Amino acid sequence: MNSFVESVLQLKPNVAAFDCDGTLWSGDAGESFFSWEIDRGIVPRSLGQQMRARYAEYKAGRVSEDEMCGEMVTMHGGMLEADVVRIAAEFFEHSFPGTIFLEMRDLVKRLLAAGCDVWAVSSSNEWVIRAAMKQFGIAMDHVLAAAVAIDDGVITNHLSRMPSGPGKPQALREVVGTVDAAFGNSRWDTEMLEMATHPFAINPNADFLLTARGRNWTVYFPDGVRRE
Image (cartoon, rainbow, N blue to C red; front, side, top):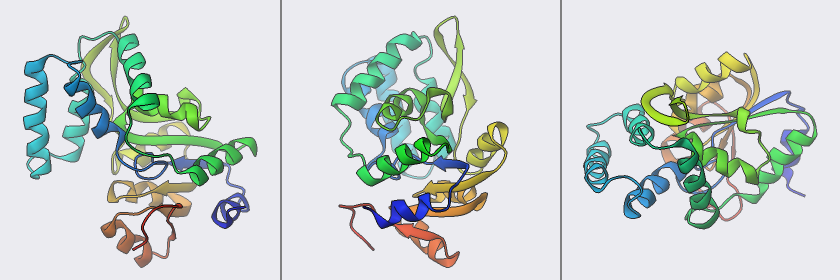
C-alpha cells in the first residue's frame, strides 16, 4: 500500500488533471520521439536537419517553449495521421527510454475506478500521449495535448492546441471548468496546479520544487527518483 496514493484517494476528487512527462513517467516522451523519428528518417532528411538546428536554438533560449513544442507537431504536416499514430504507438511500446512511475499508474487507475474524471494534459504531441494512455486507462478523448488540425486524414501545419503554461488551465476550463486535483513536475504546470483545489508537485524540477514548497503544495517523489 502506498501512503501517497491512499492520501489522494481519500480526497475523493471528482476531476483530476495530470501532466505527463516527468509526472507519470521519467523523461520527456515528446523530445524523445522527436529525436527518434528524425534518426529513423520518418521525416525528410532536410526537415530533420532544420528541426535539429531549431531545437538547438530552443535549448539556447532563442526559441520559446510553445514555439518548439508546436513545431514538433506541425513538422508532420502532409503525413497521414494514421501513419503517425502507428509510429507513435511503436515508439512508446518499444523505444521510449523513460520509465512509467508504477504508483502514479496505480493512482490513475484507482481514481478512474472510483469514478473520477481523469484528464492527461501535455505539451508533447497528442499521438505519443494517446499511445501512452493505454498504460493508464485514460480515454483518448480525455487527452489534452499539442495537436494540429487534420484534413481528411492528412496532418496540416495549423496548430489547434498547445497546453503549456497558461494553456493548460485554459484547455481544462474549456472541457471541465474546475479541477479538484492536479499533478505536475515543472514550471510549465504552475498555472494548472494553481487552478486546483489540491495541487501536487510530482518529481518536481529543482525550480518547481522551490515553488511548491513556497506555496505549501504537496510534494511527492515516486519510487526510484532521487529526492532533493
